[in-house]
Image (cartoon, rainbow, N blue to C red; front, side):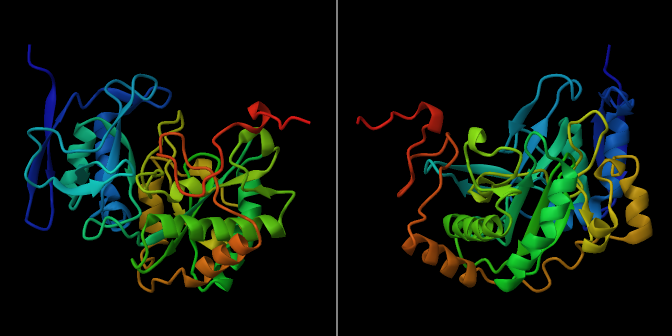
Length: 342
C-alpha cells in the first residue's frame, strides 16, 4: 500500500516548484499534535526571514524520522537524489577533511528539508561564498542550573554595551529554550579562530563587569549558578538553532529574533512557537531585517584578546571532538586533574 503523500506548490525565484511531502499527518510534536504538514506550512510562512538569516550558507539538518521524542540525527551533505534546487558547498572542517554541505537558497529548499524530516536548522556563521570567514560574531548566553531566561535577559544589555564599546552593533534572539543568542554582523575579514578569540575577549570583559552572574569557565563544576558565555559556539562547524527554526521541545518553541525594547519589556520566550510566530511576523515584522546592513569589524576585540594574553590570560579549552589546538590548556576536568606533588 502506497504511503500517504501530498504535494506543496511553493513559489520561488524561478517560479513555482512542486515539493512532495510524505506522511504529512505524522505528528512531530506529540503534546500539541503538530504534524509534519503543519510544520511545512510554518516553514513556508517564515521562509523570507528564515532565508535572510540562514540561507546561502552551510547548514546542518537535525532530523527526526518519527517525532521529537524519538531518534534524531544530523545530516550535512546533500543526500543522493536531492533535487537540483538544493545547493551545496565544500567545507573544510577542523580535522582538515573536506566535504559538501547543504545550502538552502529558496523556499522550496526549506520545504524539501522538512520533507527530509528536519525539525531544527543549524546554520554556519559564514556564507557559501566564503565558508572560512564568518559574517557574524555569535555569543550564546547559556543559563546554568539555578538560572534561566531572566538571568540571560539581565546580562544581555551589559553584553550589548561591551560590544558597542568595541564598535559592534548587537542583535538578539531567543534560543527557543532558556537562553539568549547575541549576534553582531561583521565583515568577513577574519577566519573562525580569530572570531572565537574576539568572542572570548568580549566574554571576559562581560565577566569582569558581572563576576557573580557571568562566567567563562568551560568546566560545569566551576560555573555555579552563573550564566555561561559559550565561546565555543564561535568555532568552525559549531552551530546553534537558526533564527525562525523550531526547537525539538514539547512546546514547539521557535528561536525568535526580538528587539532590545521587547527584552526590556519582559518578553516571554515560551510565547514564540510554530503556531504563533507567523502572526507575530505579520504584525511586527522581522527585527533582523537590517542585520547585515552595516557589518562591523572585530579589530578592537582582537586588541583586547592580545591585551589579555599579555596579562597572562591564555587560550581556553576547545570542544572534545576538536584536535588539540595551539596554546590550549589540558582537557582535564579540574576535579580530576593530577595535583602537583608536594
